[in-house]
Image 1 (cartoon, one colour):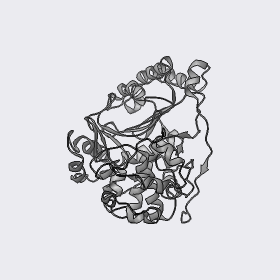
Image 2 (tube, rainbow, N blue to C red):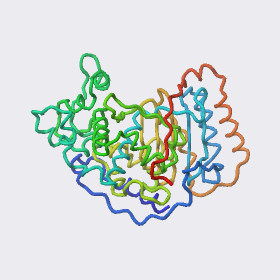
Image 3 (cartoon, one colour):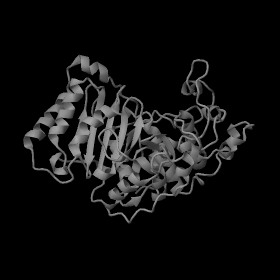
Image 4 (cartoon, rainbow, N blue to C red):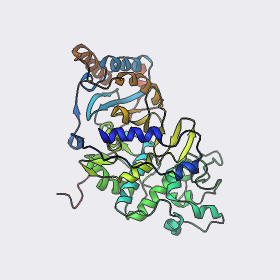
Length: 411
């Protein structure tokens, strides 16, 4: 629990609102105290618990399930984990358990984690080193000197200054997808601001991060992840497409099962440690959870993660991996909680605000067998829902699957 408390303290203290991007980026995070080991790792699968045993009110979770249906919220799945146990794992028909789900821009957070792992293996250089030399063979000489100052840190924090504007009626992503070589197209965009000075959330940044990762590791982000991240976490099924040059989509399109999304949140919650191994260097996790850009008064951006130092949607200070359509991995260190939401055209805050009151307690609650039975019935009802009006808002298509194979040196 010491590691979790330390993460909560870091998130609450890093860079007060109103600091400039540059000042946030230059302020090193405080060193974390020595962490205490956790007793359980869900590598082989999650354990489950009644909500009350983990200090969560099952009646509030039941109310949330009822309101999701009553409001016709387009939720596909909802998972709540606390203290290493899943207390709610719900699937809303036609989306079903064990299906892969498009996590959209949660992909960016996964890619950032891979950069951290590669840094720990000394396969990626200093985050503040220029990236142009790493991709020089794919880029024509740029007349803008600002591009020579572009670093991996700028790309990870969405402060590259690269032009992401629409042209000829097409947004940036549509333009890039129509180009022959996505990396060259992205790197060829003009600079509209000095790198490190302005936040602009755009696919160009993480597409270039994926290209750098491929260049430095000699393999795609998807293949690197299967060996160095997914296999250690016990994530065996996924889908992650590549472009024509073999670069994994860095901006979106990764597909995972919700319980595996929760494993990623659990890794972040425990500061990059898994099975008592520092899978992601603690220094990189510190940097990823430090604000490098001010998005708004109460929203900061780290390296591929959204930071809420004052809380949001009823939650205390926390951080999230977010994706279009309502995809979310929320990590609440002060409560030792990971929550996963998937959907289609969903505002995930609508779900978070319903669920957050359930975890206001920090100690186990008295057993509530009636509440547990009601919640179980609502979960079963959601999985077998016959409400066609509601089901029409939750259409989810299963994806092709890539099976993760054990690394060659695995024994």
